[in-house]
Each structure stands twice: as C-alpha cells, then as structure tokens.
Length: 404
Ligand code: DOR
Image 1 (tube, rainbow, N blue to C red):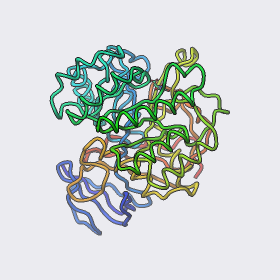
Image 2 (cartoon, helix red, strand yellow; image 1 turned 135 degrees about the vertical axis):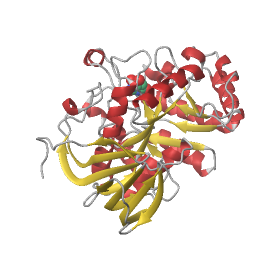
Image 3 (cartoon, rainbow, N blue to C red; image 1 turned 180 degrees about the vertical axis):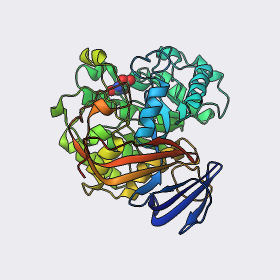
Image 4 (cartoon, rainbow, N blue to C red; image 1 turned 90 degrees about the vertical axis):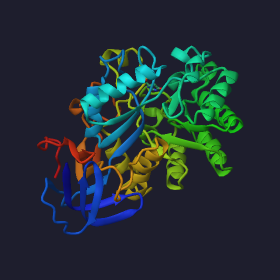
C-alpha cells in the first residue's frame, strides 16, 4: 500500500519544511519536494501535516460501560481528533487486571482498525487496594503500563511493592495522585500529598513513574524538582486544566484549579518539564453526568483547544505542541511514532490551522457529549487522519460552524 501527501507544510518537534511525504507499507519511505509517485495522492496545499497524536490517558469504557463509550465509538472520536494511538485506562468492568482482558481489548481495537491501543493493567488486582498477585505472572514486555486510575493505591507499602515489581519487569507506573482520606477535606491537599508520596516511592524503588493529569502548581513543582535530580519521572497535563478555572463549576477529577495553577502549568510546558498533553477522555452518559460523574469527553477537542490556547496564545510554537502531543507520548509508550522522518510509522494528521469553528458536542462522534467547552470558538481543524498510510478519518462537508 502506498500513499503520497503533497504540498503540505510538514511540522514535527524538530522543525518544518514544505513538501511531500511518501508512505510505503505503512512506513514513511521518502520525503522531499516534487516527489513523483504513481499512487494514491492527497493534496495538502494550505494544510499543516503533523505526526498523528498519541493520547496517554483515555477511557474507552469497554468492557462493561459501553453505554458511555465503546472501542468503536471511542476510536472514531479519536481519529476525528487527529489521534493514531491511545493508552486505555483499566477502570472497566471487569477491571482490566489480566493480560487476557488486555488482549481482548487490543483484538477488538484491531477489528475496528482505526487507532492503535495500549491497554493499561490495574496496579492492584480488581482495584482491591492490596492484591498484587496478578503482577507476578506478567512476562517482561507483555505490559507497558500499570495504573490504579481514579483510585490510586492508598496503602504505601502496597504501592512500594508494586513499584519494585514494576522496576523488575520494566513496567511504567502511571500515578493518579489523590489521597482519598483528604479528598473530602481539600482536593488540592489530596493531590499534592499523593504526588509527593508517589514521587518519593518511585525514587526509592527506581521504577519509571508517569504522573497523570497534574493540575496543581505544587504538584508540578515537586515533579520539576525530581526531574532536575535526574529521576525517571514523566508527567502529563490535560487541556481542561490549562483553560478553565474552578469558576466554571464543571466536575472533573482532579478538579479545575486556579489561574495561578494554569499559568504555572503553561510555563512548565514552555520550559520542557511537561512530557505530554493527555486528554483524560472520560465520556459519560447524560444521566451519569447529572448524578455527579466526574470527567470530560475531550479527545475530539484537544488539538483545537491546545492550538488556540497555547500556540495562538503565544505560549509555545507548533513544534513544541507536536512534541507533547506526539513525540514524547510515543517515547513513553515505546512506539515508532511521533516524528516525521524516514523509517517512522506513516501516521499523520492534516490540519487547517486557520479554520475557526465553535465547539458543539452535538457533533461529537464519542457517545459522551460531556464537555465544558461548548460554544467556545477555537482554531485548527483536523481534516484528515492517516494511520499506517491509510486514511482513517476525513472531515466531510463543512458545517454551519464554518466561519471562513
Ligand atoms: O474525571 C475523571 N474521570 N477522573 C478520573 O480519574 C476518572 C475519570 C473517569 O473514568 O470517568
């Protein structure tokens, strides 16, 4: 299978050029100007061509909660957002605690055939908070990431033992930092104390630790300090924590914070301390949301929001955005993506960055229409998503939201 993308402005973490990309058998095989190929060709004139995005924090809800989302609806939403790979959380039903369940999810995602998935396993078996027996049987290389997601592991000895096991098996521990004893008292204290605990346990055990949806200035300060000391720590921030404050009164966990936190997180991105922007795509039904379920259906709006807020807002350039949405996430997941160069996967996204539109969750392909961003005017629309040299998403006719 061959595909040529011509005349686009090609942008990745390392820089940009105007020209053509030729993908053969799923891999970028040639790049340059005026490539003359007799194969399916896409004219990308006027568009930006970037490496497809990789989302380190996603809930597709299958198995168990498919009324909120399933692998098919989630995959369609992901490619509409320009994503080619997602890292799926384990808070499904049953909880994803076995390699068999993870394999089932990957098999279903392959059948759907739109995005690549990495399925995370829970840290404790079935989120019991203490049972680590399922980690014993994992072979090296079989599982990349374990996480307790919204639960976190309250018992420090259990967490330390899990981290030691993770180091032995070369698994990354993804930490949702929240001390549940303190959540009812102060959600900031709940995040900060657990970030500090998880950092110190990670340092002690020597495991690779990834800090999910960092939302407070203090947590980011602790992480920066740890990174400066050379510890194996990575972190992500979510688009909503870069835009809205708690004044918006939209329920998400961790909660929306203050302007001071937002500015600190943006500076941390600018200065290279943030490895990834991850959506924490958390689709819910209208009824669940009404009943207080925390979360935002965010995978279809992430690029536009980040481009508008961070790039047009003057905080970072498009290369830096590509680094945190593609390159560093692909390094954390250890996949051959995130860079446009010969030999990398032919996973690309074509974007009209001048296109201005209004977010309307009625247009979401995700089953979850829960977003605090409805009616927000944003720039940057995904036109085409290409996975392994195959078009997996193409924007259809322009809707009434088109301002140009
Ligand atoms: O807001 C959230 N929603 N935070 C989490 O940690 C879990 C997620 C969900 O699964 O809905």
